[in-house]
Amino acid sequence: MTTENRQKSSRRTVLAAITGLTSIALGGAIKQNAAPKETSGPASNDATSTFVGKGFGDLSGFSAALASLSSGQTLVVEGTVGLSSTVAIDTPDVRIEFAPGARIVTDVTNADAITINASGVTVSGAEIHSPQVFDATNATPTFGVVRITAEDVSVDGLRLTNVPTVGIFFDGVRSGTVSDCTIRGNYPADSWTGSETAHFGIAYDPSENGGRIKITGNHIMDCVQGIFLGNYGAGSNAYGCVIAGNILEGCHNHGVYSSSGTDACSITANTFARCSMPIALTGRAHAITGNTMYTHATGHHLDVSSVSIREAIDCIITGNTIVGDAAPDTAVVDLSNYKTDSFEISRNIISDNTIYIKDGMSVVIRLGRDGHTRQMIDNVISNNIIRAPGIENLGVITLAPSPGKNYGNRVLGNTITLHGLTHGIFARDLSHLTIHGNSFRFEANSVTPKIVGGVTLAKCKRPEVSGNTFYTAPGFGLNMNIRALYELPGNSDGQYGPNNYDASNASSFTSLSLAAGTSPTLNESGPGVPTFFAAPGSVWRRTDGGAGSTFYVKETGALESTWAAK
Image 1 (spheres, one colour):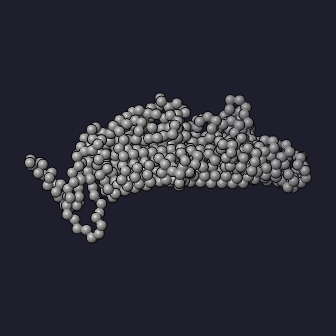
Image 2 (cartoon, helix red, strand yellow):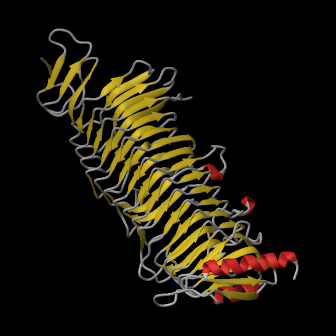
Image 3 (cartoon, rainbow, N blue to C red):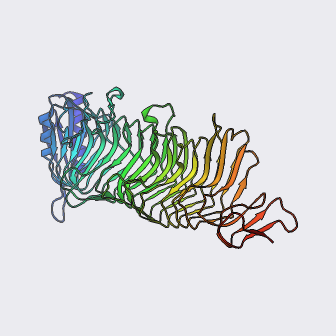
């Protein structure tokens, strides 16, 4: 025996004396060294085995090392393991730990590289290289680089390079954890068709008993969809999923996407860098909070920022930062329906978000969708800071359901800078709508004359508009007919004022543009003698009046001529 071998043997003997049991598998050969150990109860299975991979040709040895584990044991993997077919982990409550520098190289493209079929398993630290073969065909996924079919499995610190279809796949389970993994999908940009979307960094298909999953601290890059939550089979709703502290980068079709059958997801403190339409969910009671969505605004499809919740009820979108382009004729924050049999958008809160849209003619915040949304109750849009070009004939904030039970909605305390030819807030077919405490600044010019509204109302019953500020920034307003409070036909019983109107920088500025026959109750101020259609009891404080011509009251009728100076 050489001096080096005697030293290795001595080290193993000492290690065996310390741990009680050590198994060493080299290239498929397993050796166990046992040391006597005093016990005062049932024998313990807490033991550590080591497998040292030697590249391709180790498949049977690696499979044997996994199969030799008992519950409670740990397998430490060193070196490089080559996989030409699937290996399975079938023993519950075991740990597979990959030592620093250890990795798996697989040439498997249409099956699992690793299948975990036992509950309570932990896999950590592996570096897994898959072939550069990719498929995003819209079909039910059946395999992943790592596929999990058992409960309470934890995947930690994996580094996946190249994802053929799914990186980490929770298939038909209730719960599990993915943390601190790096998934570089490397899906080729020139392969993106705009419609083939079944390529996922992490995918979760819940079981028949519903499901919960925790996905935290991961870095997911260059997938079609970064994280997918959806029900492909007989499972019921996934609920209580937590997606927090992840970085998602370069995803072609959503960073986080959930299909029907997902409720009460928490999407918190994630960063989305150049992910097209970063968050798209379906369902109730979701919380989207404290996320950052940033793009370069180059016109590329990756530079479209948005948050969408379909069939949204009791959801919260708050404290997010959204910077980038908008897809034309869409919405940046969109709560609307796409199914005619799921028509309610109610009790949602969109608050304290910072949204800067550099390019793209789009609504910024939209609630409701004509032809689909027929019940929109008690939604709140508050304290958002918005800078956007918007879209002509709609608003930066648009509330536009179909006629129905649409009442109690509130738009409060938002700061809106309009650098396009758009309305600030556009609302239609709503009753008892409150628009209060918002600030509108117009920062656009027009080549040809254009009517632009601050608050534009159509077919609204008893809307209240008060405490808002409207003004035009210096150097803007060319060819713009700004109508701060702009009524289209069909409104009734509005309650308007007091609001703050500043016409000093505008070439054409109308504080109140009221439709004939709407007869709102006014409590407003401005220059000149009032000539508005208004309800009896309305008041007007004339800012350029004198003695006996400063305060006006509407005493009779709804005509514009029956104001009395006091």
